Length: 291
Image 1 (tube, rainbow, N blue to C red):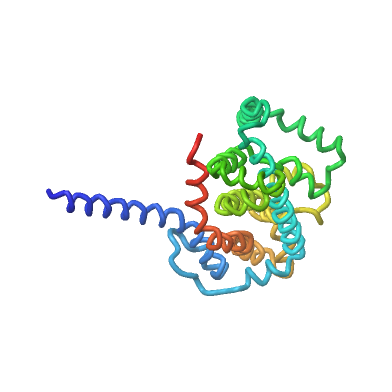
Image 2: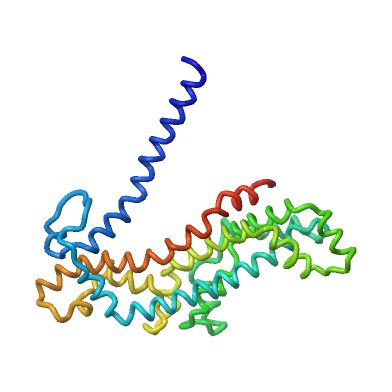
């Protein structure tokens, strides 16, 4: 068999496998979307795969958007994402800049200590005691400040900063620039792909986070969206959403409410990906050039 035919066969197999992986990854979300648009009675009686809405109905979404917890959850989650990502990127960039400079005293020792935290931590109880001791319990900042820097993201950004030629920094210093000018006017503009990717990592982590919010937050008005979603999915608390229906109808519509709630919690973060996707591969590759 000729080399050209072998290459075509190989690429065909690759595309086939990628197509299968794509279907496996996308179908669960498609199933949830179709189920959320289906009639409650028909979706309960249906078995097997779902290819279209069964008895198209928007009733579940109407019920979900009447839930006041949904709006407070969105508000709290947006605050955590926006404020959290801003703090994350700022502190990560500052740390990565310092660790990427060659003339920093004990640079490698600091990097080893930071890397150590990827594998060992104090545990949940010491973390809770620290949060309680500084007075952050029952505050949205308790889900932001203790998780300001991810060691993995710090290493990626540090590696990216190291790939920038030293001549740019030397030229800036000759013009009288200090470290803040070098970082914010030279290093960061040249590292926008990496910042976009790491910002996406942080944003997805903040958007999907519920565990620490469940530990540190007590007032229901402070619950993020994922806590509300968890109550509906795991604890099955949909009775208050469908309180106007009979008992049997509550159980039926409760299933479609769960699907509709998942979609309302998932769609916003999906819209972020198209704007960051063009930076994704470039940013990860830049951050992986050097060890």
